Length: 201
Image (cartoon, rainbow, N blue to C red; front, side):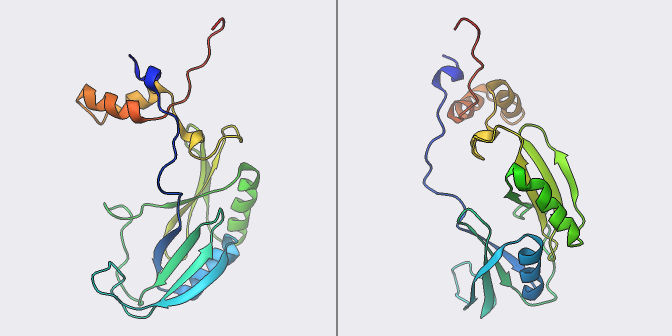
Protein backbone atom coordinates (compact mmCIF):
# COMPACT_ATOMS: atom_id res chain seq x y z
CA UNK A 1 0.00 0.00 0.00
CA UNK A 2 1.47 3.37 -0.96
CA UNK A 3 1.45 6.36 1.38
CA UNK A 4 -1.14 7.93 -0.95
CA UNK A 5 -3.58 5.16 0.07
CA UNK A 6 -3.26 6.07 3.75
CA UNK A 7 -2.78 9.81 3.49
CA UNK A 8 -3.85 11.56 6.72
CA UNK A 9 -6.08 14.62 6.67
CA UNK A 10 -5.13 17.86 8.33
CA UNK A 11 -6.16 17.30 11.93
CA UNK A 12 -6.92 19.32 15.00
CA UNK A 13 -3.84 19.70 17.18
CA UNK A 14 -3.88 20.35 20.93
CA UNK A 15 -2.55 23.91 20.62
CA UNK A 16 -4.52 26.64 18.85
CA UNK A 17 -1.60 28.69 17.61
CA UNK A 18 0.49 31.52 19.06
CA UNK A 19 -0.81 33.07 22.27
CA UNK A 20 2.21 35.36 22.46
CA UNK A 21 5.82 35.53 21.37
CA UNK A 22 8.08 37.07 24.02
CA UNK A 23 11.16 38.82 22.61
CA UNK A 24 13.78 41.10 24.16
CA UNK A 25 14.49 44.80 23.68
CA UNK A 26 16.77 47.23 25.49
CA UNK A 27 14.70 50.24 24.43
CA UNK A 28 10.98 49.88 25.03
CA UNK A 29 10.12 53.36 23.73
CA UNK A 30 11.80 52.70 20.38
CA UNK A 31 10.17 49.25 20.18
CA UNK A 32 6.74 50.72 20.90
CA UNK A 33 7.29 53.27 18.15
CA UNK A 34 8.48 50.67 15.62
CA UNK A 35 5.69 48.15 16.07
CA UNK A 36 2.87 50.70 16.22
CA UNK A 37 4.09 53.21 13.61
CA UNK A 38 5.87 50.93 11.13
CA UNK A 39 3.72 47.78 11.37
CA UNK A 40 0.46 49.24 12.63
CA UNK A 41 0.13 47.02 15.71
CA UNK A 42 -1.60 48.19 18.91
CA UNK A 43 -0.10 48.39 22.38
CA UNK A 44 -2.68 46.50 24.47
CA UNK A 45 -1.11 45.61 27.84
CA UNK A 46 1.75 46.97 29.97
CA UNK A 47 3.11 45.45 33.15
CA UNK A 48 6.16 44.74 35.31
CA UNK A 49 7.40 41.19 35.93
CA UNK A 50 9.15 40.25 39.18
CA UNK A 51 12.13 37.91 39.12
CA UNK A 52 11.23 34.31 40.00
CA UNK A 53 13.90 31.67 40.49
CA UNK A 54 13.61 28.28 38.75
CA UNK A 55 10.83 29.27 36.34
CA UNK A 56 12.92 30.19 33.33
CA UNK A 57 11.99 33.83 33.90
CA UNK A 58 14.35 36.60 32.75
CA UNK A 59 17.21 37.00 35.24
CA UNK A 60 16.29 40.58 36.14
CA UNK A 61 13.74 41.95 38.59
CA UNK A 62 10.85 44.28 37.84
CA UNK A 63 11.20 44.18 34.05
CA UNK A 64 8.82 45.93 31.72
CA UNK A 65 6.78 43.36 29.74
CA UNK A 66 4.60 45.03 27.10
CA UNK A 67 2.17 43.35 24.72
CA UNK A 68 1.06 44.29 21.19
CA UNK A 69 -1.96 43.06 19.24
CA UNK A 70 -0.39 41.44 16.17
CA UNK A 71 -3.70 40.34 14.65
CA UNK A 72 -5.68 37.10 14.47
CA UNK A 73 -6.15 37.13 18.26
CA UNK A 74 -2.44 36.73 19.06
CA UNK A 75 0.09 38.86 20.90
CA UNK A 76 3.68 39.98 20.40
CA UNK A 77 5.42 40.78 23.68
CA UNK A 78 8.73 42.37 24.63
CA UNK A 79 10.74 42.30 27.82
CA UNK A 80 12.95 45.36 28.35
CA UNK A 81 16.38 44.13 29.47
CA UNK A 82 19.11 46.44 30.80
CA UNK A 83 21.09 48.36 28.19
CA UNK A 84 24.55 47.24 27.14
CA UNK A 85 24.09 43.46 27.12
CA UNK A 86 25.62 41.34 24.36
CA UNK A 87 23.37 40.78 21.36
CA UNK A 88 22.07 37.30 20.65
CA UNK A 89 23.10 35.57 17.44
CA UNK A 90 20.11 34.56 15.34
CA UNK A 91 22.25 32.18 13.31
CA UNK A 92 23.23 29.86 16.18
CA UNK A 93 21.19 26.86 17.36
CA UNK A 94 18.58 27.89 19.90
CA UNK A 95 18.35 31.39 18.44
CA UNK A 96 15.32 32.78 16.69
CA UNK A 97 16.36 33.13 13.06
CA UNK A 98 13.47 35.40 12.08
CA UNK A 99 9.84 36.19 12.79
CA UNK A 100 7.39 35.99 9.87
CA UNK A 101 4.07 37.82 9.97
CA UNK A 102 1.37 36.56 7.61
CA UNK A 103 -0.19 39.28 5.48
CA UNK A 104 -3.19 38.81 3.21
CA UNK A 105 -2.20 39.11 -0.45
CA UNK A 106 -4.42 42.15 -0.98
CA UNK A 107 -2.60 44.03 1.86
CA UNK A 108 0.94 42.83 1.12
CA UNK A 109 2.22 45.54 -1.24
CA UNK A 110 0.68 48.36 0.81
CA UNK A 111 2.33 47.13 4.01
CA UNK A 112 5.71 46.88 2.31
CA UNK A 113 5.29 50.48 1.13
CA UNK A 114 4.33 51.55 4.66
CA UNK A 115 7.52 50.00 6.06
CA UNK A 116 9.64 51.68 3.37
CA UNK A 117 7.92 55.03 3.95
CA UNK A 118 8.97 54.80 7.59
CA UNK A 119 12.60 54.72 6.43
CA UNK A 120 13.14 50.99 6.98
CA UNK A 121 15.10 49.24 4.19
CA UNK A 122 13.19 46.26 2.76
CA UNK A 123 14.55 43.31 0.75
CA UNK A 124 11.94 41.92 -1.61
CA UNK A 125 9.33 40.86 -2.35
CA UNK A 126 11.20 37.62 -2.98
CA UNK A 127 9.44 34.59 -4.54
CA UNK A 128 10.59 31.58 -2.50
CA UNK A 129 8.92 28.79 -4.45
CA UNK A 130 5.64 27.11 -3.68
CA UNK A 131 3.11 29.49 -2.19
CA UNK A 132 5.70 31.77 -0.54
CA UNK A 133 6.25 35.43 -1.39
CA UNK A 134 8.17 37.32 1.27
CA UNK A 135 9.80 40.64 2.13
CA UNK A 136 12.48 41.07 4.81
CA UNK A 137 13.69 43.87 7.08
CA UNK A 138 15.01 44.46 10.61
CA UNK A 139 13.32 46.07 13.59
CA UNK A 140 14.97 48.57 15.93
CA UNK A 141 16.39 45.70 18.01
CA UNK A 142 18.09 43.98 15.07
CA UNK A 143 15.40 41.27 14.91
CA UNK A 144 14.94 40.00 11.35
CA UNK A 145 11.29 40.27 10.34
CA UNK A 146 9.45 38.83 7.38
CA UNK A 147 6.17 39.78 5.77
CA UNK A 148 4.88 36.54 4.23
CA UNK A 149 1.97 36.14 1.89
CA UNK A 150 0.60 33.30 -0.17
CA UNK A 151 0.29 33.15 -3.93
CA UNK A 152 -1.86 30.03 -3.56
CA UNK A 153 -5.64 29.94 -3.83
CA UNK A 154 -6.96 32.48 -1.31
CA UNK A 155 -9.52 29.95 -0.06
CA UNK A 156 -6.69 27.91 1.47
CA UNK A 157 -5.59 28.60 5.03
CA UNK A 158 -1.94 29.16 5.95
CA UNK A 159 -1.31 25.52 6.86
CA UNK A 160 -3.21 24.08 3.92
CA UNK A 161 -1.33 26.37 1.53
CA UNK A 162 2.02 24.72 2.35
CA UNK A 163 0.98 21.11 1.72
CA UNK A 164 3.19 19.34 -0.81
CA UNK A 165 2.71 16.50 -3.22
CA UNK A 166 4.18 13.14 -2.24
CA UNK A 167 7.11 13.30 -4.68
CA UNK A 168 8.33 16.65 -3.37
CA UNK A 169 8.01 15.62 0.28
CA UNK A 170 9.66 12.25 -0.38
CA UNK A 171 12.62 13.85 -2.19
CA UNK A 172 13.34 16.19 0.73
CA UNK A 173 12.88 13.57 3.46
CA UNK A 174 15.30 11.30 1.57
CA UNK A 175 18.02 13.88 2.25
CA UNK A 176 17.43 13.45 6.00
CA UNK A 177 16.79 9.72 6.49
CA UNK A 178 19.02 6.89 5.29
CA UNK A 179 16.60 4.29 6.62
CA UNK A 180 13.69 3.92 4.14
CA UNK A 181 11.39 2.76 6.95
CA UNK A 182 11.93 6.03 8.82
CA UNK A 183 11.29 8.00 5.66
CA UNK A 184 8.05 6.09 5.04
CA UNK A 185 6.98 6.53 8.66
CA UNK A 186 7.28 10.31 8.48
CA UNK A 187 5.80 10.53 5.00
CA UNK A 188 2.79 8.47 6.10
CA UNK A 189 2.13 10.96 8.93
CA UNK A 190 2.10 14.01 6.63
CA UNK A 191 -1.06 15.36 5.04
CA UNK A 192 -0.25 15.83 1.36
CA UNK A 193 -1.78 17.57 -1.61
CA UNK A 194 -4.30 15.32 -3.31
CA UNK A 195 -3.04 13.76 -6.51
CA UNK A 196 -4.55 15.43 -9.59
CA UNK A 197 -7.59 13.60 -10.92
CA UNK A 198 -7.02 11.81 -14.21
CA UNK A 199 -9.51 12.12 -17.05
CA UNK A 200 -11.94 9.22 -16.96
CA UNK A 201 -11.50 8.55 -13.21
